[in-house]
Amino acid sequence: MVTMPEMLDDLDLALAWIKDNLASYGATLDDSPVALVGPSAGAQLAATLLLRQCQREALDLEGSLSWSPSMFKVFVGVSGVYDLPMEAEHLETIGIVPFLSHLSVDGDLTSFSPSLMLQEEIYSKAAGRHPAVHLFHGQADTSVPLEMSTSFARALRKANVPVEVFLQKGATHSEPVVEGPLAGDDIQAQLILPYLLPDVRLPRAPCFMPRSVLAIAKWVMPF
Image 1: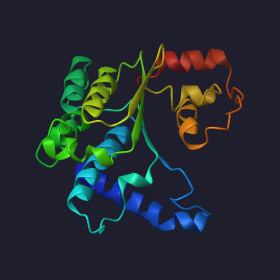
Image 2: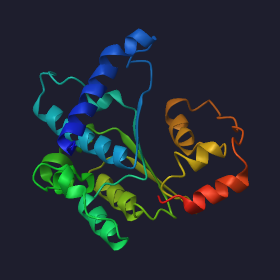
Image 3: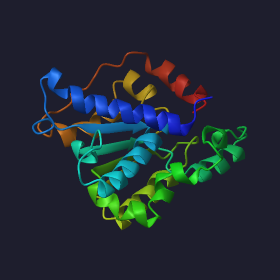
């Protein structure tokens, strides 16, 4: 089983690759805004790594790190899991066998929970290096309580990190990545574009499936 430290290592390498290869795609960090986006567990991993990198950079003033949080204009977290102990309790209440503790090396979930990490001085003091944050959460999300995003936002504001929160009525956990795009409503693109390309307006995409089918899919979707 792959553990969260290994997942973070993979993400760390991926972000370093982006920094080193951006020029080959005709862009530079100086003139091209870049966003870091993660849905669900991806938001948890990205937010955790950002905080860790802020703390590492605060200690390493020689610039030996492979990438910097400053390369991102914004972090967009979509339906993120920012408090793993809270999520573990929630999953038990809805009848899912506990598994999150097995993803850490020693059962420690606090070290991979951005909301809880910010309660530690080493992270809260380094958070001034953190990019702006935009959090999205569906109010009908039964997989990840929306308190995840609102609590994380409070912790970020306490650490003086600019943050916006958008709670969408009726949206489920999977809607931003499954049902929404199929219905021509790409929530993630709508969240990102104002930060990266403020003058561009996203055209309404066509609905790729009958809305009656999408309504059934939303009803049977376990997430």
